Image 1 (cartoon, rainbow, N blue to C red):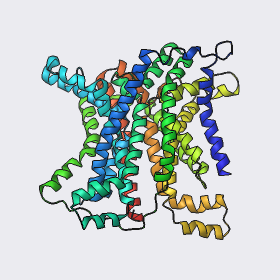
Image 2: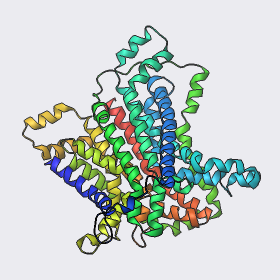
Image 3: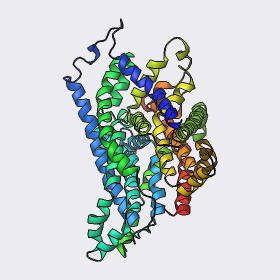
Image 4: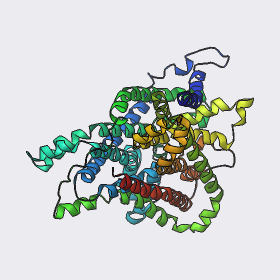
Length: 520
């Protein structure tokens, strides 16, 4: 039953994307044609877009992996700071959308920013080049996504067999043990983090759009918004779609063999490497970096918003704030509910990979597909132009997050409890309602908070699907970035940050409690 339900949900979510792709192969009279794709690959402009997207993804994934592995090794294998504390700190930046970092850097060293007012326009020209284009986009995406690499690597380190390291320490020093034993044991997590960050960076829309770096998501949005050319926008999305499909297909065996098949925590952790003296304080100072990543935009937005009282800004964006909270509340609840119902008893690999594909699709293409599919007469047109279509887009995009966290939570269950429920005659539904959900409710709350924060900050889908008069805070920031006064933009961004901090801190504290209670 659950397998049929999960496949039905997946088919409903993937149908608009499939319809959009098929529509791009049809002419106005209904005949099949390659006209939309003619000259797509030989076009030097498309080659440039592909190159820019791949270069941005590789640089972001490389820098995020370096930072993430460093944090994971220091947290999981040294006594510098308790790894549970670092787990909480490094998780917080995940709740902030990357484009907020771009807005903060523009206000700091962009034209008319703090640096320009301090050094003058001529003195700040050398810094302006660092915030726009590839350097700025790579920096902002790395600041947003390096926690993904850190968490993936840390999970592998904590679940590795400690006996290998204990034996190695009898024959060599701690540094060689870290490089030759600990680091190889984290290889599955490192590779998983690299691929995830690469995919997220390749399909990101907000940062390249604000920093004027041409990649496929920005060009897809431009083609549709300027000319309402859904076929041309879909054609532009095809290279990115094919590339992501190939990467996910290649990643699939490794994902299920190494990531979803981790054993439970059976052994005590390997004893940490003792770091003493000045090095311990130096490493502690470096580990404050995630906290600085969070505080930096907050401070910049507060300083920049001083030109307009926050109370006035709050009144001006009150409708957008209510709309954003409503959409995030409903979408997060649906994501967790669908994940639990669809993956309640068995893990469908097709469902996981299908939701993963939706997660890594360029957000503008996802929005365009929903518009093409639902903007038509009849019963399908009922959803178009309503909040329901925007919520459907959010669920399509972030369902994978809820599914992934639900699977991870299920693996923490004691199998004996499930076997006892089966012996007592409980069916799959009763086991789900009376055993799994009550035991995993804190983990589901964390999944809900993460989905809530992701939906609240999403801009690529929102900017296309918001109904008339129903803009969100993310869309308001996108509009103010191009046309509005800077103090109003900074104030609106600060309000969004404040809204994101609440679920971020709540989820981090709940994760701390879960880890401590379950001793993993």
